[in-house]
Amino acid sequence: MIMSYCPRCGAKIPEKDAKFCPNCGAVILHRKIKRRIFSIGTLQDRIIVFLIVFLLCVLATAIGVLVRVERSEAQNIVQEMNKIENAVEVVGVQLIFGNNLMYALAMFIPIVGPGFGFYVLYNTGRILAAYSAISKINPLFTFLFLFSLPFTWMEYISYTLAISESIWMTYAIIKRNFKNELMTMSIIIVICNILLLFGALIEASLLSLYP
Image (cartoon, rainbow, N blue to C red; front, side):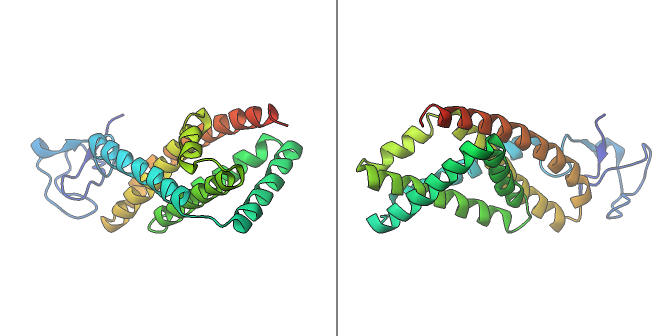
């Protein structure tokens, strides 16, 4: 059911003939009542924010890829990643899914979520740079190869959704309308869970092909 919202603060209008907003007290002129899908921001606004955040996520990874990694540091990074791959063989897809979900949930946190997310993606770039240094291949090739894998897109879409929602939740808190935004956040968390689960299944399947 599409709800009516206050044109000033975006709060839900519980009564059809209400004269004042229950949240900010603004006078409600019913001819100006807006019907919106989201409590904060229009669908178009959210798509624009999503695209900008997605590009920033890719940029953060690209910066990590292009920063020089010394061979000794690269060896340490690759050794740690090999340990994780061995753990995946034992634990299975749950480890990949749990790890990625933990990162995604942290990215939903208002204010600090985006910074954490970009840091994680920067480190992803550092890992790619380490593999490139050990294999003596161009790190940009490794970076482009990463985006040829379907699970990469699922993870980046999930992280972008999480960071974007963190931004919208921060804005909703400023507007004192965060309670209404919680429903949107809950739906997006479910979507991220589904994307990350399928991504983990694909990633685990691909890892099993390369013993």
